[in-house]
Image (cartoon, rainbow, N blue to C red):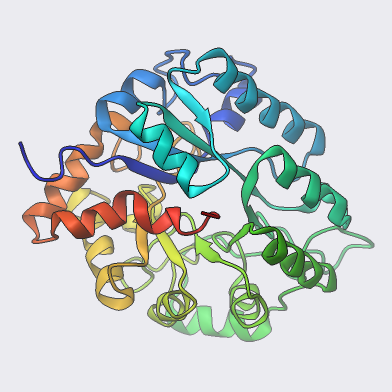
Length: 331
């Protein structure tokens, strides 16, 4: 048996519950359905031991449904799933053979600039929250977006990206209030969809934990959802973690494959160090007609074998697979 065969992966970004809701399907990972990347048998097969489940962004009523679905799933299948609010609960779930579910939200527009919503969602179990899912509020009469300018999604040259950053505005006043409250509550701030100005202002402003749950290395693939080396270094200096993503468009602008995905892991390790790199699959969040480089949780061992072949130790893979992102939630 290889030294990494017993790895329990923590997926830092999973859209399966919201996609099931959008399609009107059963919101339960135990419901086996090949139309989705994720279900219980494939999670078991590939060693997915925990995940940050995305439970809302802009629609408050939808978020209520998604949170309720996660609670009901853990109640209906107590041998398989556990709702986790802390690192120790994730570890305990894995020791008990359960898959730990940590709830995250991908934006706070739904709270309509009311911190009470954030506090209530924390009470329900949310432990990771984005400020934005990419939306901005400049040019509108009124918006509850937490950054002034929307995020750009696509490929840009370094010169184009630098120009965009200079022209972009970042945090709103309410975003700063939210960051203070998130730090007080122990909710990690996910910067994966923030515009670059918001990214930098957040790192400067917040005292709370920060992460980038799903995105890759811009120097290897010039997509604006990928982090420049400067951003990777700053995130590591803030004790943050990036979840290297399986979405092909973030892996390569020409030929996404496993070798190129591995290069993103190796580059992030070189720039950030072994304590700041994790897994952010974006399973069921990449579009209906696209297949991620690692196609589903059952295939996760392919990643560990490839990293092993490139000289990454079992100890470092343990950090990448789970322990680094565990640091983002309270002990």
